[in-house]
Image 1 (spheres, rainbow, N blue to C red):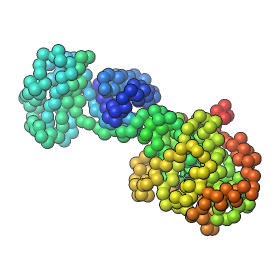
Image 2: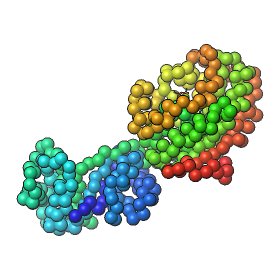
Image 3: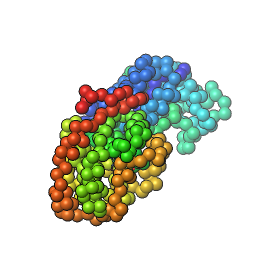
Image 4: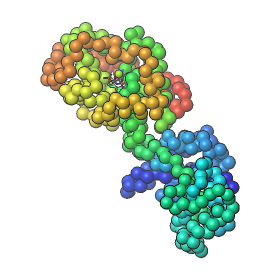
Amino acid sequence: MQFDHILIRYGEMALKGKNIKKFIIRLQENIQHKLKEYPNTKVKRTQGRMFVLLNGHDPEPIIDICKNIFGIQSLSLAIKAENDIDAIKDAALSALKSGEDVKRFKVSVKRIEKGFPMGSQAMNQELGGHLLSNTEGYTVDVHQPDLTIKVEIRSEGTYITSRVIPGLGGLPVGTSGKSLLLLSGGIDSPVAGYLAMKRGVQIEAIHFHSPPFTSERAKQKVLDLAESLTKYGSSIKIHIVPFTKLQQEIFREMPDGYAMTIMRRMMIRISEKVSEKESILSMTTGDNLGQVASQTMESMNAINEVTNYPILRPLITMDKQEIIEISHAINTYQTSILPHEDCCTIFVPKSPKTKPKRDKISQIESTKDFTNLIEEAVNEIEVVKITDKKQVAAFEDLL
Ligand code: ATP
Ligand code: MG
């Protein structure tokens, strides 16, 4: 007998009361979407659980995909047997033999279908005895087993599972609405996007570039980072904003110490316009308290003044080391450290104010009208859609 199902457990979602149905259906859709290259697989819901029916597929690549889907707490390979003691014995034996490095095992039976003629305790003993007498070198250890063979007797059949594989947890992407991720080429913002997705947020991205000061390769780097994030969700639309003129004007016209704060305010203003157009209700950044001049409390206060949209800052209290660890885990680190220049690293004031004041900034900004340059930047946005696997095309019809 072979494993023919993958059992999906969805932990935290069980707490969501009335909304639970919405969360579960979204999780099912997300799993189905990720398994579209395996057309014979089916994702089924039963009470409190979900199953992927393998229909002959090798389970390993499917487990690898499911391990990266938010909302899944853990998974296990499962065999579905008929509610018949001999069939259950055969399946339990296969499950035990599939375990690696197992010497001590335990059987744990749960009888959800109360009509089944044997009680759980009697079943534990019956199955344990069967496994011992049909194998060699195993012992039963109910306290510290290497492997627990779980047997769940349900009305539609009995599921036998062994190894528990941890999932990513979190909430299914799409259940918390959309956010516009300000994606630079750095280490932080892709990690921020990943963490927002973990809370069920669907991401669109916006990137500011300043050609010819920033290169095509710098832009490609950002597209590559977005592609890495699609692994945890679905396609990502990226709005690429030509920022050169606005940036040059800021650095020409505004006092050196304030240029950086004003440039950030422009980024937020443009991001808000894009959010509005796309019906997106929040922005997400890789800001990290105290890391650089633009991320002091005073800077954030001054930058945030230009929008009343919520700004999610998932990294705000993290240590750099924690952020780097996540960037390694999600495979963005190697791309992020490529030495291509970013628009913020090219136009750098010699001594940016680390404690800008709202009033002062507003007053300085008001000496120059940036409206037309902002409009122009928004009108010239290029939209690129990155699909789960590869970048398809820039498509104007989304503008
Ligand atoms: P990152 O590693 O994400 O670049 P950082 O530590 O370099 O962050 P900053 O350069 O101060 O910090 O940027 C703070 C945040 O502003 C970034 O995390 C990102 O969300 C946003 N940001 C900065 N530059 C750009 C850009 N060129 N396009 C889009 N967003 C940007
Ligand atoms: Mg940066």
